[in-house]
Image (tube, rainbow over the protein chains, first blue to last red):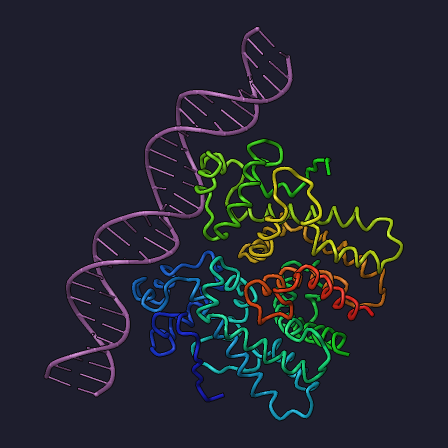
Length: 224
Length: 224
DNA sequence: TTAAAAATGATAGTATTACTTTCTAAATGA
DNA sequence: TCATTTAGAAAGTAATACTATCATTTTTAA
């Protein structure tokens, strides 16, 4: 993919949009690497500043705090996946096939597509699986939600829910099914890697193949 | 319920078991209240010490850090639920009915049972829904897992998985179904309360009733 | 009953975190 | 080229996440 994409993310996420400057993209790219390396709790703006040969002050000009940076990365991921699902399910012959394609992308997109130079999508996906829920399990969730910070996730969930509704208009839980597909994809992968007794995915096999199959079975049974 | 229960939780969770002293039970009970009030990120041992008219030093004699305290509370909840499911599904006529009873308990136990004087189960449940995932999304997950800190959750998931296997021995994902029931119960409730576009549960209705119905439909379709 | 042991409190101290402020220098662009 | 934007440098602060030491109170067991 040669086209470089810029996503429009909620304004209140940042003080200055890191996608608009070279420094900003360095910030984003390295924050993904450092969060992966240290875990979100061990990650600090000080350490990130050192890593990119800069200062805390400069980072604070982009983000109010590390929580909003994490949320920015998640939103970026959600927008990116949303864009891919939109493009890749267009012109497919039936809703069933579109749903199958969407599930394939939820599991595999980060390995098959690279849209940007500065963010490593494979590592970003690791961060989303490992730290993602922390971006929306926060004490001031309601005020952040009011500021529109979770629109990206909502739109992503709604895109897949809309396909679900086409597949089976009588199904009573399209949003729940959609959000559960996204949540399951992350949690079951995390369990397979770290708490294997909580899942039937087997680490020795190709997790992506198994996970995709599992989500397909799951969706089929719910709608079939 | 007049019987006071004491749960045996993994030893490495604590330095001194808070269930063994009066001070410890005060610590536990108030930590639930304070985490609910401030959110886990805003919660500190200093603030807890002030709340129970004590000192940081004393709290540190029980727990190495606040993460382990949160995990302790989660384990407590998992053990408590595990115990209830065991007792309450015993002697039921069929696996189907036992699974239905288990789902009912996942959703409602905290409102229907009170086993201890010092922990408010309803608020503990709020904390588990809000902060629970943080207790196992941590950078040193593998070493903590090695220390057996997640046995309670594994046993809980396996208890329900065992029932699933009795209901439908050919079903290929009993553990995944079980862990997904627990995860869904928390996430869908959280979404209904804070990010309603991510779920079909409607806040105006009785969330518990709706959630139980939803999980039943979900399990039925998976196994039916 | 008393002496030992266990549990808690009081005080102090440290490194790190999570910022904020102010002022300067370099790059950019109209 | 002059104004504006952008980044760096340095310093400072309140709070966090602990640790150490010593004194006091409470419990327990001989």
